[in-house]
Length: 327
Ligand SMILES: Nc1nc(=O)c2c([nH]1)NC[C@@H]1CN(c3ccc(C(=O)N[C@@H](CCC(=O)O)C(=O)O)cc3)C=[N+]21
Image (tube, rainbow, N blue to C red; front, side, top):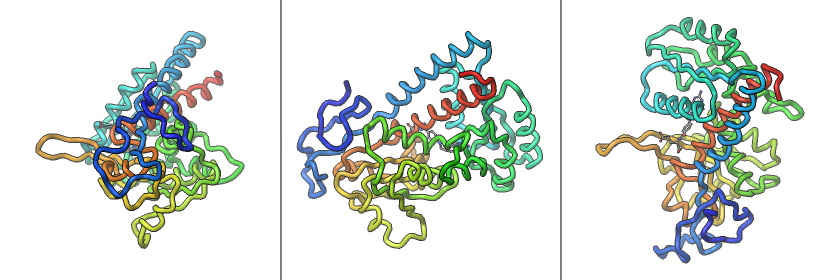
């Protein structure tokens, strides 16, 4: 049990939450949250390990019963350091659960036809159940054309317009839900956070995170507001949020005074910051300030990121199960 102190809020004291702070917080500050404590921290690695263990046993079972393994192919174009690092993480995670993975690397200056040819080849390959085109792509390539070319049944990122469209529409089921959005819901569920009827503010409206996350939260009956670069006084809106989700890629943008006391904060930002001491991944939320205001918070690294990766593995296993009609 990693929860050392129960703070008696409306998320339950499940073991995916840790809290290392003393009570009251050591640095006296006027921005105490309404429980006069600091926020509990979500242990995303623990959640991810739990999901990976379940998937590993499922994959093992699949191999034994039909002698097939799920397969994921990642297309990486160019040499972006952050993309290369994310792809390495994905490959390692596949190995951990027994998913066969390969990374197809194309040079920065390749043509759109080069990428489309690789996608077409993978669309037809029986052993590949999931295709992931690492984003962002170099500017000369049309992300739209390339994503459209991915077979909807292999679109484990859930970025194909048919999958996003079905996610947006009531009564329809997408084949895949984008991994970060699914990771956000998974964290909320596992920490016992109620979503129905809650005011949720999502900061950022990217096709890969903010937009699908806002759609998915609506499916769970949250009242969702989207805040973006043109929103006037965003902090006035975010201060109303029971649950705040951020994915903009601007380190420390969300300050303590942007939060309602006791809010749940899901930081989906992931920016690689390099200084003379090396590189580190940083979220969108000013953690030191937010932890004095929130009741529950996901850190970066170690929060939603690892859960996102495990959702990619989940989608890949689902794709293989569907392809082989194996349950
Ligand atoms: N086609 C495509 N699909 C994606 O899913 C996709 C993408 N493109 N482009 C970029 C974003 C970003 N993203 C992350 C996934 C995991 C972590 C993650 O595991 N982060 C670790 C730390 C990583 C580290 O230490 O380098 C953590 O937060 O603990 C971060 C970011 C997926 N994305």
